[in-house]
Length: 111
Length: 122
Image (cartoon, rainbow over all chains, first blue to last red; front, side, top):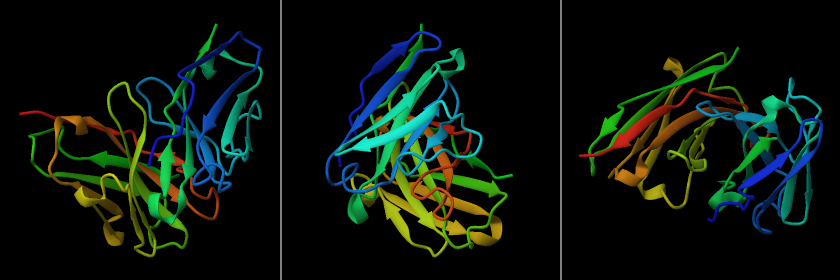
């Protein structure tokens, strides 16, 4: 089971928007609406930001939004703030055999 | 409030077996829909899912590591144990355990432990 593909880096100025892609296959991202996104600051544990493609857990700002088209999921951070600078990972259910797969990770820099 | 904490050795030798314990509070692993998973992250690299155990003792493993992994739970002690055999230096990583609830956030890990760093070296 290969990792989902994310761009290594993305950046934006404060107040701008940045979108991160997460590309898989029809056996994972494209086959199920179970894509989640995690934010990880240096030296810290990951934090769940989005689940089931576009749902936000309680406490996550609505600046964070998720979507999916075909085999590619996306995370958009609107109104970038300094504290949004972090690594972001997507994850997807991958069927009963492979079960779960993470993405390669994207480092978001706030310029 | 849900919390999880990983514990185990910080250093293991190649070929040895690693045993990690996740001790949790704020939920019961006998509640329908609840699960605890293990995820690791080599230094400077991406997250990798390892294993997951559910309230009903259903167990899932990463296909690439399945032959080396065993996950078990002790509901009375609020613990989940992961064993990984035949450790190799490439297994050096921070190992996290995390909570999952199929009713509130399906197929996602909503609460994570702080992680424990394991180094494999002779």
